[in-house]
Image (cartoon, rainbow, N blue to C red; front, side, top):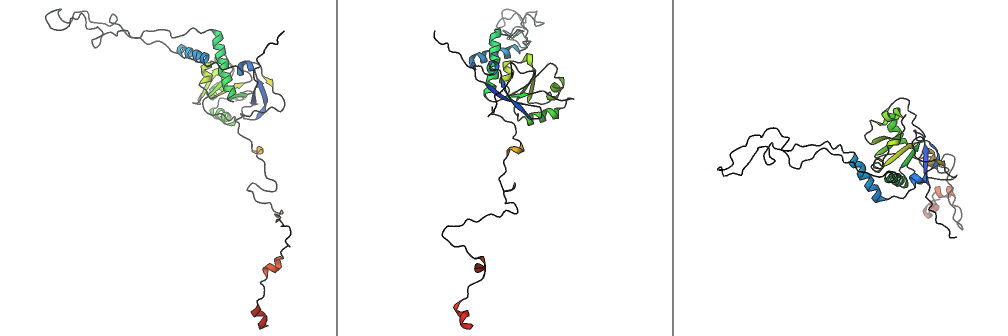
Length: 281
């Protein structure tokens, strides 16, 4: 019996932090949602349908039958040398009706649910491959405060257009991020592929992240981490302070050259006597 080929999805590792930027550990996201293949034509078709569904379609113009007035013939049929006209509300007259103008309509496109789900997985996988997915344990704001929300994004090293996925009970977090112009807020159940595509970063919490989250193997490191490095990460040079100067009490040893005698410092300081000085004596 021939061995069957099984496609192994890559593992996606992400740093799990709190809203203050402190590292809590490294976790592995569900490869079903964050390790799928990116089907660009499928993603384009679904995003186009989602943009079309957002159109209100309330535009409307009046035809010549809906414009008021124009009941009388403007002038007689013959004898004027002009083209015959039956009403001044025809499309060629100012104030007349509009020919083939827009009418209220529904722009929604019928898209299978399987395509919508696969497009969302492709969008999330694309952001995960770029290292643009952030996981926070929870938002610990007691009262709505925009300053704390902006500080959390700075502590996490997130910039650009940010998509914050919140739960239905995160009312305080929703009001805290609501005044930031570069932040888009969406509930987990309303997340679409278009929301992910137009955002540079996607921020989840333990409650809103899709799929199963498991602990990463020991020694796993996220190379694409963009969190600000702490002060302790910089190694200090042994025997020097921050300015690079030698600490007191530790004189720098001068290298000795092999085969050359040591120079007497006292003999160097005193000048040698000349022949004229010896004759005067």
